[in-house]
Length: 204
Image (tube, rainbow, N blue to C red; front, top):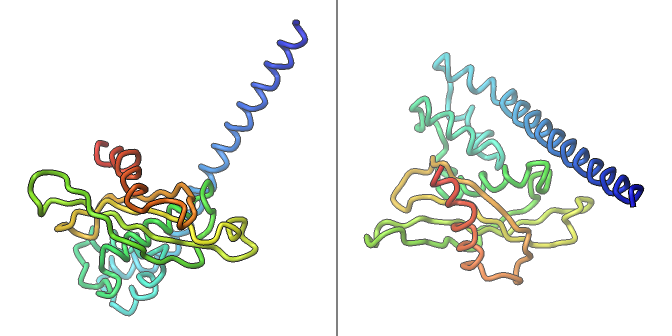
């Protein structure tokens, strides 16, 4: 009996140690990736500080699905949104970037998706005023071989919320339960996201 208890304790300790290691490793990888991204944007920030930043400098960062939302936030903080390319200054393009950043995290895809397409914008009424709506952006995304998720094909991801009459710069978030396209109803997936993910963001 004693031997069995010892074995169980050893197994529990081993699992706990692995989970702790995994959490530390993932946190470190995420921090390293964020630091690398910030370092890559350093020339942009420096030109912004000197007052020499031009639209042509911002274009490559805005066209990149990963850096797009970060650059918009940077320009918003410095009240220079006039330097952000108009074709990317939309809620859809910001939602796309927010989801791509979430997917790139080590615990998710651990990479940017190879393809992403908007499927539907789903509004959710927040009070009796018909103009007061939250918008959620439902995308499908996929990766190509040799990525492990390539076999899943098109997968559903949600980003938001954005106020229908609000700015593109909002504390939006993203999430995917990695359900395949066709296996879920988009409106139901958005409702789950609204209740279980976005609600935490709005209440924080």
